Amino acid sequence: MKYKSQKIAYWFFATCMLLLSLQIIYGFIMGFARIGYDGLHDWIPFNAARATHTNLLVVWLLTGFMGAAHFIIPDESGREIYSVKLAYIQLVSLIIVGVVSIIGFHFNWWEGRKFLEIPRPLDYLVVINVLTFLFNIGMTVWKGKKFSTTGIVLYLGLLAAALLYLPGMIYFHNQTVDSYFRWWVVHLWVEGVWELIMGSILAYLLIKLTGVDREVIEKWLYVIVGLTFLSGILGTGHHYYFIGTPKYWLWIGGLFSALEPLAFLGMALFAINMYRKSGRVHPNKASLYWTIGCAIMSFVGAGFLGFAHTLPQVNIYTHGTLVTAMHGHLAFWGAYAMIVLAIISYAMPLLTGRKLWNNMTSLFAFWISNIGMLGMTGAFAVAGIAQVYLERKLGMDFMVVQKEIEVHFIGLLLAATLFTVGIILYIYNFIQFGIPTDEVLMPEGAHDELEFLNDEKV
Ligand code: HEM
Ligand code: HEM
Ligand SMILES: [Fe+2]
Image 1 (cartoon, rainbow, N blue to C red):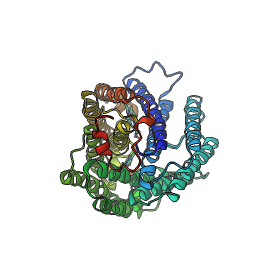
Image 2 (cartoon, protein in one colour; image 1 turned 120 degrees about the vertical axis):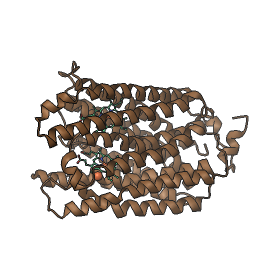
Image 3 (cartoon, helix red, strand yellow; image 1 turned 60 degrees about the horizontal axis):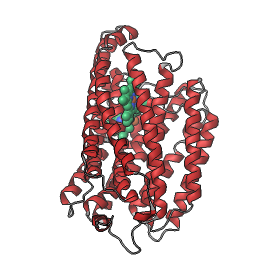
Image 4 (cartoon, rainbow, N blue to C red; image 1 turned 90 degrees about the vertical axis):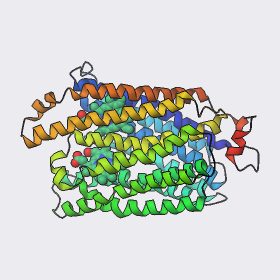
């Protein structure tokens, strides 16, 4: 690493690993409940498990983005993090708020709005926490020796994500209005500003891993930002079809959301092109796999499977069924989980000086988790499509249908087990790296990490 304070990133990444493990446990609790083994029902009913599963997902991804910012921003701005102490205080307070929320869910202390379940008083603490983070990173950018497009897009993405949290905190009496603004958070996050975060981390990794000129890579980044906003903002309309909003949303939502896959396609083509242009052979194969894999899987999960149910003619049947869960899993995994795992894989050798990047553990982690997640997506797809036909086409009772599709959750659990083996390997590799040390600080004036890493002394 170039700057001592980049070490902070490690603690954010370690928190990620912990929260991801917990998220998976809650996934299994739900999976087993779905096939009738709901022994924990009295303590962890399905709704509490679901809220815990999805909120843990959002929190570990945000923690990963914050870790990425602590690693990338010093490098892109040419200076140490503004305040190391503040960074640690922010991380610890984030963990405390997270733990209190999760415990709260188990005691029915929550808001019943999917993805925004965190109780209101804790929302205020989240806001203070995120402002602290943005202040610290913002000051680092501001006082930096240089400004880069990659660094600025990353910062703006994080800032916009924080601002968009606010519409979800306004209190409305009307359920339609409440739902309307809930999508400003949920949709404009994953199909708007988080794409900027993803695009900038992707750009950073491609600059480092392929050695292609920054100018070329950053031009693509502009195109991706453009495509994201062009389609994603009005694309919000695909959540306004049948919730009591005016009819014009049917065509606005349909048209613009149908264009959304273009931004993800752009990212996939971008990554593959840059890889093919690559002038250097970077030894960090694991990180390269996650980076290129992320660009491709996000197109499949978000772009392709999102498009599959985005037109109102289709969505009228699939809305709120397991087809949504099918898309939700592969989209979150491909776009955001994989980009976080990519930057962690890239950063760990530089933080610790250990070259555990091309071993069986890290490569198997990649393949097994991805094949497992594709299997899970397939299981949700089969269950979802069966549900649509039985419930929406044939008009069978909701609960009767749930019983009919139970068998597909056995498939889900098998695939989820494979997925979990992949994640265990990833975490095992992460632990093997050990804790960062100042001994691997690059010498003053050294610019090229690759040369530094190829140095046998490291
Ligand atoms: C071993 C792993 C996992 C299992 C067994 C599992 C299982 C489940 C189940 C049963 C649901 C509820 C579906 C329903 O409404 O009936 C769910 C929801 C969800 N899970 Fe997972 N999950 C796992 C891992 C993950 C991972 C790694 C991610 C993200 C990368 C993820 C993202 C989600 C999301 C976004 C939802 C909400 C979907 C929606 O809104 O419809 N899950 N999961
Ligand atoms: C990485 C980006 C994306 C992620 C993480 C993501 C994730 C999700 C999740 C979790 C839901 C369920 C939300 C809820 O019910 O509260 C959802 C719903 C939906 N997504 Fe995505 N999505 C992404 C991109 C896209 C794209 C690009 C499209 C369209 C081309 C799309 C189309 C839809 C539609 C139509 C729904 C509503 C499903 C329903 O009616 O139940 N998504 N998405
Ligand atoms: Fe959306």
